Image (cartoon, rainbow, N blue to C red):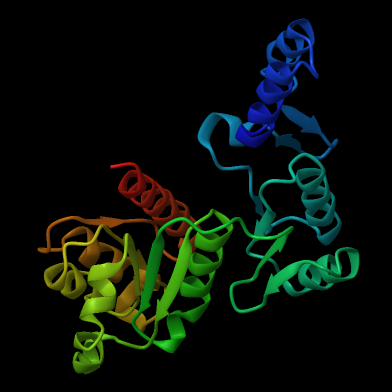
Length: 259
């Protein structure tokens, strides 16, 4: 059960289409029936009710058959939000495309969604330093949209050519939340954080030469940012940044419309 299903259940009670006893039984069983046992996995089907956002399939390390089964199970339990899988390998991409021809598949992001994206609330701007950061930036943007916020991209504005970024200041300032993706020395979030006061989540990527240590140098630079208000997720974690930013944008836009 997710938040949409809960509202429908309560609406049915109010309209007399469902008895109080049946609704109480459904709600009473929900904590115990909040997962689907697929044999190889216990799929959390009540995460949407608890957090407002549904379970997501992390594709890395799973077989294509497992990814397809998990996506199908998620989709069968919620019509309000898309069923989402991330970090798909080539075999999983092919299997998902064959099993769900109408799915929305972003090969750059290595993500897929079954079902339409929700109506966007608020806007997130995803800023990336260079084209080598595209897979992580694309994952973040895809997740933002699947999690109910609008998204705009600002690409290839790394600090090696800072003038490219300065021309986008108005776009950065107008967003409800920013995701700033960078590898190498990871300086871009500090620069952006010094230009605007927009909530910002920084994503270090594993892009760079040997002394970047697979993204550790960028991670440490972002954690030690002298710009106020820079929050940081793990290396290459576009998914986590997308979830965070979408929640910030949804709350910010929702608050603005009620005040």
